[in-house]
Length: 421
Image (cartoon, rainbow, N blue to C red; front, side):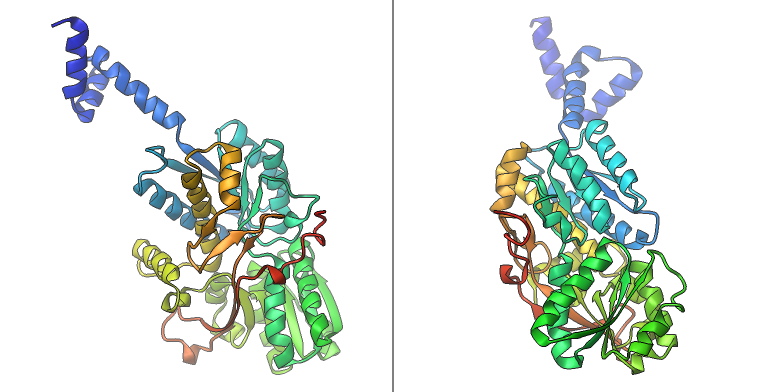
């Protein structure tokens, strides 16, 4: 037997553990050479998904949920064999809710870490910074935070995909439910950045059909803790409906203080993106009777098969706790991307873009698809109402599902309105 044949025989017959022990001991070098090359090659060819989100700051709880659920999608993809044996890897980075930080982290993910794709972000303005870097570097970016601007022609590129609902569709769905039932005199409390103003614009657009009258518009800075100077101006306007166009701790703090001001007895409180995590943190009293919209609530498991599958998987890994709405964005944004990679049979960018444009996917809430002109994910918006403590069956049973705006391109801003020819 030749020396070459002996080496091949040894390499074929030895176990992975034995090879690694041999390397550690400095022996069997000829036999382990090809194996070590394959290990290095596998690491180099992993499918890397960069995931910048604000782990620190006022949206930290939502961002951590997004990262956890995105990892679920990666784990499921890998458990199914990946892409012909190529495994996916999620690279989470803290963008600190700052546009400059997000741009820097995204650039590092692409140029230093070799990310094949980018997903994430949890701010209307921050995601524009991430999108700018990704499109300049020719990388697909799947945004999982609400924004109207990212769909507009001036920000859009073929690499841009928007998994999250946008303010126009969210506020529009809630407005169409609330205004005919609760009254036409409407006030707005607006967080003074892109998200807040886009939500207010969405409410106003929906309200035109019902003849609403805007009786007050009060703006507040992001991360406001004391709303006592803002709320009396709204009370003085005597609205039927108050639209809270804010998010995270801003939403929770403004609702707590509105409750203390007795405003719930005077008007219907509406939060277009009514958040599960903040509702649980803020308590039943502050949120009691508040109406809002959501992409997902775990109660959908009773009627939608994919919602039950997602919720069961999350519960299994989290001691029975159900997943949140913004966590679901992380799961679907990354999971949908990996479905497209599988359909394309490659990570080559243009092939994956084509696959995403033709994708019909149901990760957690019913079928979704990306509209061709702006790559907005067309999906259902669910209307929810916060329960009083007396009506809660357990600590997680915080909302009633009271309505749905089913997936429909007709409720989106038109492609021409967005600047597409």
